Image 1 (tube, helix red, strand yellow):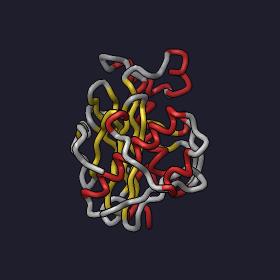
Image 2 (cartoon, one colour):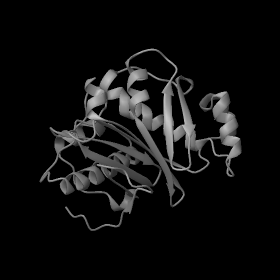
Image 3 (spheres, helix red, strand yellow):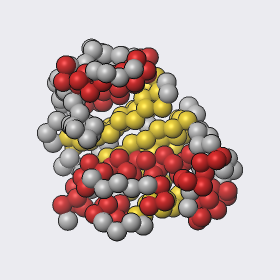
Image 4 (cartoon, helix red, strand yellow):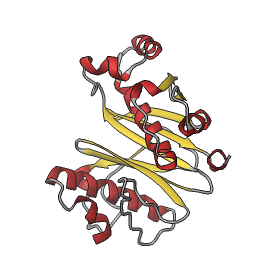
Length: 221
C-alpha cells in the first residue's frame, strides 16, 4: 500500500474537504474482504472501478489520520465510512475520484466526475430544466454535462441521509463560474438539505468535477 502513484487535486479549493482524481489503472491496491463482498459477482470493469475508488478514498483517509481504513458497502450500496468521517466516490471510465472530510466539519459530501460533453444531445431534455437549458446555451461550450454532474453530486450528498429518490427534473441548478446553487423542486427532507448546501465545480484534464457539501449544523437542524 502506497500513496505514490500520481493523482491530481480537485480543480478548486474545497474547505475542510480532502479530494483527488486519478487514473483507474494507478489505483488497484488490495482491498479487504468486507469491501470486496460488494463486487463479488461484478464484471471485471466494474471491479476495477470499484477497487480504484476505494483505493483512492482509503489513501485520502490516511491523510486524516486513519491508519487502516476499511470501506464496506451498505445494503443500499452507500459507502460505510469510519466513525467521525464522511466522503464520496465517483468513477468515469478510466478515472476515479474521491473526497473525504471529518463529520465535525462537513456533514455530508457528494462528488461526481464526468467526461466533458458526456451527455448526448437526445438526453438534454431529460437532464435540463428550461432555465438550465437557457443558462447552458450562454456558456461557450454549451455542455449539459456540467448540470448533469452537479445534480449527481447533490443527490449523492443527500440520499444517504434521507433515502428520497430524486430525478433530474427535481433539482434545479444555478450555475456560476466556479460554484453552483441547488434547489429541490420536490417537497421532502431533501429540499431542506439541498437548500442549505453549497456546490463547486471545475474541469481537470477533460473531466468535469462537481462537489456538493452540507454542514453538520444543517443536517441536525
